[in-house]
Image 1 (cartoon, rainbow, N blue to C red):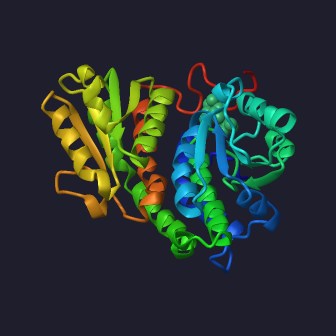
Image 2 (cartoon, rainbow, N blue to C red):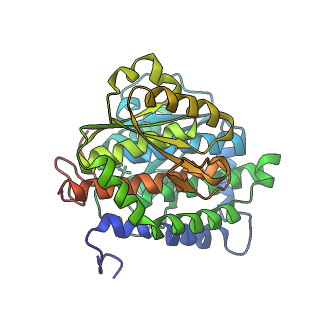
Length: 363
Ligand code: G6P
């Protein structure tokens, strides 16, 4: 059965390992035999009409939304805002003339996100799309349009494969919409090929998980805190990477925009404080490298997760290079594994972290 743990000690590790297969499933569901995604004309017409996209999510789904903003803006040229569900539900937003709402939710049951959908339906009367892993869930039923993640059941409380699936489906939808809008960048963006490359890349990372186990043992087993840093989408992945570490290893971890470090947070750096830098974007790689020097000179224990194309010989974790827009699909995977092994090292129940629930149905 899909929900069997098999030989895996924890569901989380199984779900991390499943990510290449999930990407293949998404290809099969939306891109079989064509590079034009199979997304309904009704949905694309409604989205094309929008003057602004609002992506709504909580927790990891919110982080997948942050990555989605870039995809939608680059591929469709529609301005896109990403909002935290619990905040937006009670805000007085200055909505655009023709908003379109995209709900990202693994479970389809998150009360904070649902509260926004209630306003979308009853107050703002705007069209919506729910992208979820659970068919017939509440947010699936109550949205105008729906798409499935095809990630298979996610059981570990800490979300992994749903995050990568959300990014992949966002890319598929953005590509389809960009094609309809005849955006040149979208026409050239071979989403099918990129997802194949990402699947292969993730496979090579999970095949070398022992390396990450060792790093977790050396750098994270005893530490009180840790920082992830990056710029642009690397920053967005830093937020998700830090959340993973917090959720299951209880290390006080934070994700920061590398350039912001010097404006305050750098005060926290002590001897041996782990700082994990994500470098996958050519435009900002040099600046993040300078920020690494700043923390190193304050004693930080630096670890870099870098795409091959930007790698230097001192980099400890080098991952394959694909389109920069989709690098989060791969750069998050070492971070998921570091969190997993840090949790094991510290002797916690990886799948059932304290105080957390898989799906939160209260506001
Ligand atoms: C809970 C889970 C998180 C998840 C969030 C949103 O807090 O512990 O892992 O990211 O809910 O869940 P959703 O099902 O809406 O994606």
